[in-house]
Structure formats: C-alpha cells, structure tokens
Image (cartoon, rainbow, N blue to C red; front, side):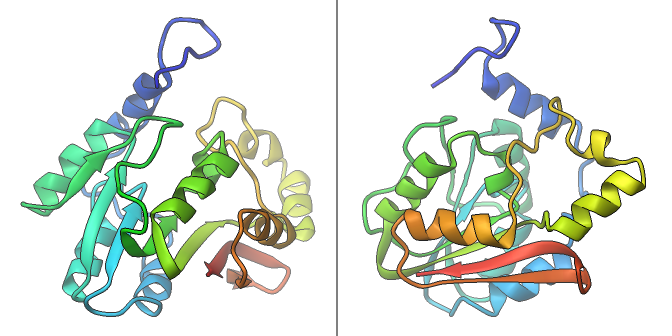
Length: 212
C-alpha cells in the first residue's frame, strides 16, 4: 500500500525507486564476498529460497549457481528490472511496502534477508510474513549492520555519527546483537544464533543471524 511521506504527497514506493535509480548499474553490494559466503554456507542444492530484498539479483545469481530454486522479491520495480536483466527467466516478484509477501504459506525452505531489516519500518510485520511463508523447520538468514557500543562511540569520536544516523537516509533501524536476537525470538523463532562479523573485535561491521 502506498503511504505518503512527510510532504504528504510522494508515496514510499517513489522514494524506494529513487534510491535504486541512484545506484550505479553493476555496483557490487556492500560486503558481498562475506555475505555470499555466509549465505551459501547455509543453503543446500534443491532448496527453495526466498531472496527478500533481492535488489539487482546479485545473490539470486549465486543461489541459482548453487542449485537452489529462487524467488526474488523487492519493493522497487527498478531493482526487479535489473534483476530480470541480470538473470533472464528469474522468478522475480514485486511486494508492496508494508504489504503481504507475494508467496503462499509454507512455500519456501529458506528466507535470505541480506541487509534488509535496517530498511524496514515495520520489522515485526515483515518477520510475521517471513514466518508465514517459511515451511516447518525452515531457516531465516539475516545480515544487517552492527551497532555495538564501541562502534557507535567510534563514529561519534570521528565526527561521523550525524551522517550515519541522518533521518533522510534509507536506514530506518539500527541493531545490536541483543536487539536483533530479541526481535527474532519474539517473532517466534525457537533457535536464534547471532554473531558479529567483519572488522576487528569490538569494531565489527555486521551481524549475521540464523533463525529457525
């Protein structure tokens, strides 16, 4: 469903399209190698995987090469256009911002949400949808930027915190290991494993989570 922004006229979808229009064609996703290693280490050939927030299909390409069946979903039509261009015949579907995912109940083995949750206003609602489409015993794989105490303090000392937390940016949510673990547990996942990744101790760049 389209919702107005603070100006009262432009829908959220228009903003998402503008974000994607500004992304250079062929741009490599941030931390691509580390995220790909995490993803491919937790899927098996033959599994049906929902690539949630699929973007231009960079990870869908890797999943298909690994023998998975992929459903790519995004809220931005520009992202899906690029994904279909990259992977002809890709099962790519549009989702309305804040609406239900365009999949049936119990229809996928794995949901991959790489650098997605930080962009979502209603994380609780999205995770409920993830649970709906996951089969019994299915797995949610998440990566998101890490906001530990030392990392945030370092941003402040470097004079970069205001830019990092700019409310006009497309990051809406900021997670610590504890808040991500709690969010996934409250969403109904019985087993949640969260670890920090990238960078050096106390200054990690990302969180990787496996939830079942």
